[in-house]
Amino acid sequence: MIKTRIRYIAISDSGNRVMLTTDTPRKELMEYLGAKHAEKIYVDTKEGEVAHIGYIIGGEWYTLYAVEGRGPRSVKK
Image 1 (cartoon, rainbow, N blue to C red):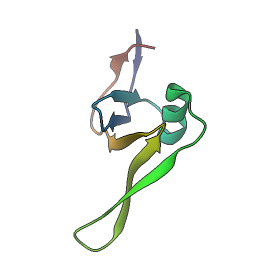
Image 2: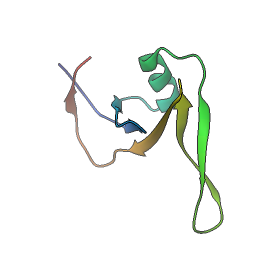
Image 3: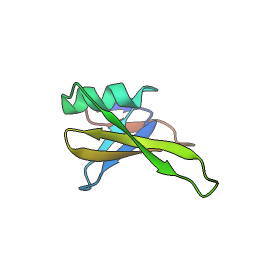
Image 4: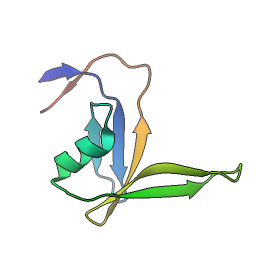
């Protein structure tokens, strides 16, 4: 086990979770999944703006969540 800080969690539409430890979640998620292409997911906010919330990779929709205020955690590599 390696102690590292989890910066993002990607959760797919089927419930799969991927803990991401770098500041480049798209790149790390694509490497983890062995993918070469990702499309961005956007949603409309209540304020009428458009927000980027995740990626479609290999037919799965992954929503990204930033993890804040946590120290190092054990992550299986």
